Image (cartoon, rainbow over all chains, first blue to last red; front, side, top):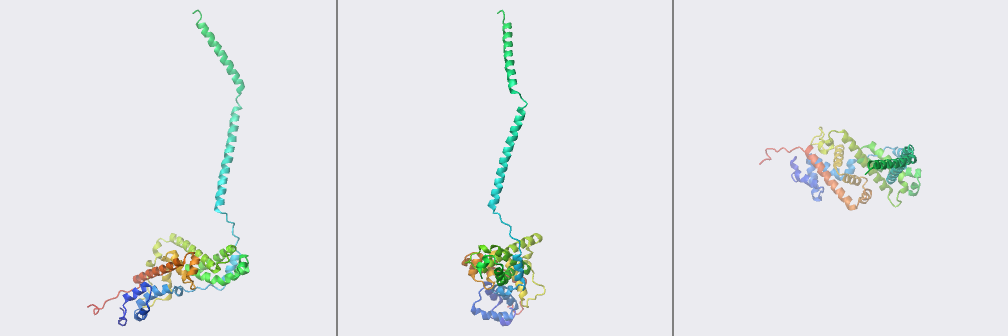
Length: 156
Length: 196
């Protein structure tokens, strides 16, 4: 104890009451007496109890400058109009639709290109003339085989 | 307050709203940010947001409470942005903790703490509280706001507000008490006559 006059309450009891955050009326006088003689406990009271229970006084009132209301008004009324907010679902749907359209257009373009490439290849072939030649070649071959067979087996 | 004129976008009516409420909004923002410039920016943003959304304002609601709610949200956003900014700049992010701040050198244990110092320490301790406790505590200490108003601003129940304020006070006492014992309390030296 820092002073002999404060024998009625010691620092430990004092701090214990402050820590609980509730000062009983019957202890108030004893605590005041203790604080008068013990600066450390007085500071403890100021910091741990007073600043918490009366924070409004401690934090103070910072009044605004006189012209702030007009300044806010100017800021608000001269602010550029807010850009129209596009909802997320609209953005997602648009993106999905764009992808589907892209795929469709791509597949149609691919098919058209393949068809044109194939038709270009076929344009080099004269399919009717070739088939006639093939038929004639097959008939000649069959006849030649038949004759050679007759010749080989002649006299048997 | 002529809500109908406000909802029509009447600038004169809105300026009247600013005139009558800007001081409360500014002071609340100062309590959250501890910075007048930030509070001024927040006040401007609060009224801009209110002006843009006034058409959707429910006429049965309290316009002051609505402005306070926007102020709280804007202030918390700013604090978060600043914390992220400063944490990325600071090598030692723990330097802002209440344990990390040493007691002023010139302060003697036998001198009473000044209001300025109490305010500084209270602000540092408030920064250590969870966001909802800090918000409830600061609103409670703003123009004697009632629990009902705080519940409306925070969009929570009355019992939740009571609990938040109770816990915020208990946590502040613990933080400040530990800090005091660590930094201010001078160990008692026993006199030879004290020892029996």
